[in-house]
Image (cartoon, rainbow, N blue to C red; front, side, top):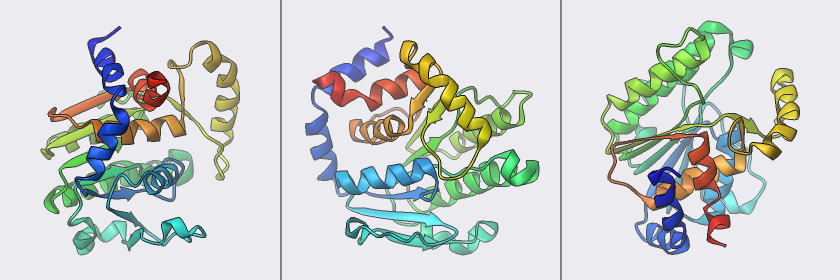
Length: 249
């Protein structure tokens, strides 16, 4: 077992204490892409956990919340094509979570690059300028700036360019196929998820990860804190972090 995983399991024993200590720091956070599947689940778990004293969503439109639990969530509406004009939306946050993304099928090649690279990178730059200390990026398994595949190359490029910004702490999550029932219809993903159900039973950390596990990993990792400048968490580490409560029990 890798030493990093053993360390995580040891820390799991004190997870609740660590979370309570983290809450007392009164940190604020923002979420990019809160209307997407990961961002939506992340916002839900953040609100339920009370881990942050102030929560802000940054997106192109307001989200209609029916649950009273979301009443204190601040919503910043921005034009991603003119982000420099909305720098105030990125000011005053200790932690940033970026779950922003689209697909080539939905937005075309140029649109995909614009969202997953340009919007993400510019947001990170503004967040750093606004005082953000810990930036969390949802990337993808296989991300590699040298890849011949557009999707993986763009993911790898934006990882590398955000690292150069110099956050106090930069955490990259590289999940495999996300197991979630999307409202948005993506036939190829639907078939992939269905095919992976039996595979995931025998190889739970290899090819997929439940979206709830990914989000718990993000929040547990924030509470664990770290003095590392850059953390790269592959799918197996995401599973471990996201199931710390189970390991504790």
